[in-house]
Length: 552
Image (cartoon, rainbow, N blue to C red; front, side, top):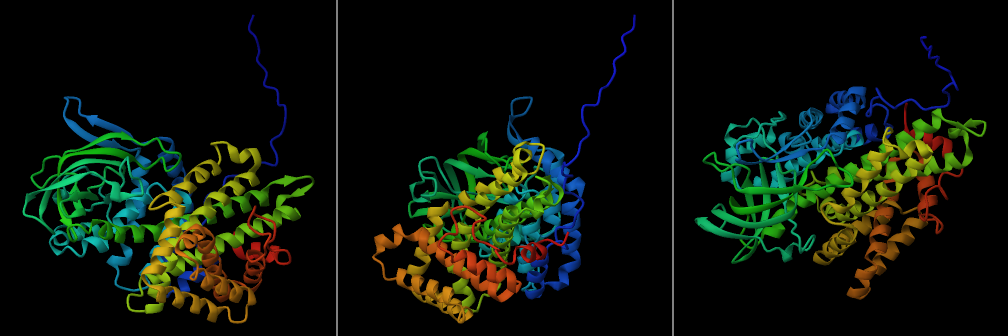
């Protein structure tokens, strides 16, 4: 007797939110469009619109999911026992890397002579980070190494064109045979972390000595980012102290450089990208910069990376806001849409303020990197780069968690977008110096040139001349200069936070919608603001703030 199996419908699916896809990240973001126009980068608006559409396309979103679900795999040996130290990736990774390279994220500010190329680059990075961040690590390190390597004419003459091209070449070959190359960084060791002066890796002369000479390097790196890069800038000690070396994956004679990958890091986020532990066994390298001055040499690369961290985390904030807004517009609870619930509106308005202020500061800093002969802009860049990296990256950790809560339980499952965004957020706060390191770097920047700090404070005082809250904050920042050194260090987080909020308030006054700027100042200088989001933001302008935030 045949059994008949009937399908019984238990319920109709309603009130579930469709996936956010096939939208344009650029045209739906009024703030970034205004920032690009202000910076004079309208010449590239068509390209930014193209990038925005491609990044928001369903296929690209799927590539991002695939690259993070199918992790990089380490293969230390070939099938016949040769040491190969290869990391292999899902095809989606290479699609994303090619997309980032084609968009100029590895080189645009240095390949295009127009000053506003910095703003165009920054907008591209800000958008790309919203969809997939792991592919930005090797791409941004490549961009950050260019100004360092340009100071080495012999090296740059050999492969500068391979750094400045927008082509992507994933092949594992010696540099001479590549169309384009990526360059990574190797600084930290087991015993030191951020304290790179504790490094023990050694370099001995191989042929010649000093800048441009060949050395053999022995030691290890505890975090060796993107080990499949074609070369890395590496710190190692010589008799004169810590020095910087250009260490390629392949030696000039075509043999594999003895850099052995011990294992890949099992990271909380950034899973599409490979980070590794390596050992150098007489690895061949060329000294970059002056002997014994390796830390200042490689920190120039870190300065650009810190800007990239701010831009990327501003992108995380933007994506958290957009996902939360999308969900609130499509989900109902207690008889009406979430977007019409007063408490939800207050929270979303606070998130919109945070996202816009972060974008304004990061974009403004990017344009400051083009101002090489303006003392005021150089001062702003020196003081605010570590400060913004501290604050914006920290706020991304906070706000991705809040956005996940907007989704409720739907946000806490891997099927949705929030899990990966939430895991991704902390990496920028840790990479290139954690929060305390950034705050101490702000103090060091002030100590090296107090006049820079005074220029920054004077600028903010002029912008906020009619705003008593800004004037009071500037006065407090001046007073912080008079504290004893040890107390300045103990207060560094408070000082840095106040510095960034004051800078953001000035930028909002200058560039944001009046209602949005008013709400930012009213909330950020409210003593009750800050413990959790959504307490004091947008009381009278919440609907206007959200209307201005996303043109979707």
